[in-house]
Length: 111
Image (cartoon, rainbow, N blue to C red; front, top):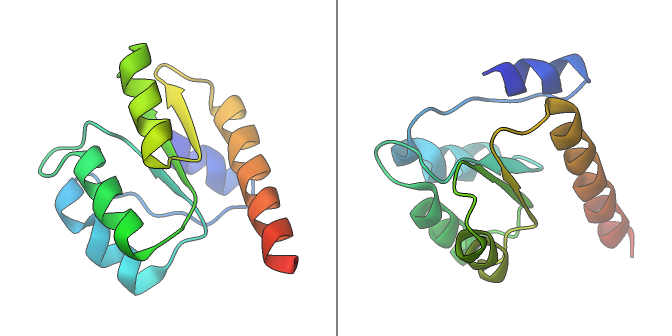
């Protein structure tokens, strides 16, 4: 929730979901510009959520997780995540990553 507050202070709107079970329904209803997805969500893990999300959406996703092994990072990126950050991470660094991904997404939409 600290991250959400940090992003809101930077001018972004955000929504916090603390359980993987409701993510897909929320995304279909709200269509966010970007998702920061924890892979270790209770209920339904983030990797399952991500795989289903990719079946219907190309919304940029940053995986933010405590899974720091190279195999986990590679799997996330090879499945199509736009970025992967390991906890603990700096909110300032994550904000920079969010801005970069949104800038690239906006540029590709203009083409």
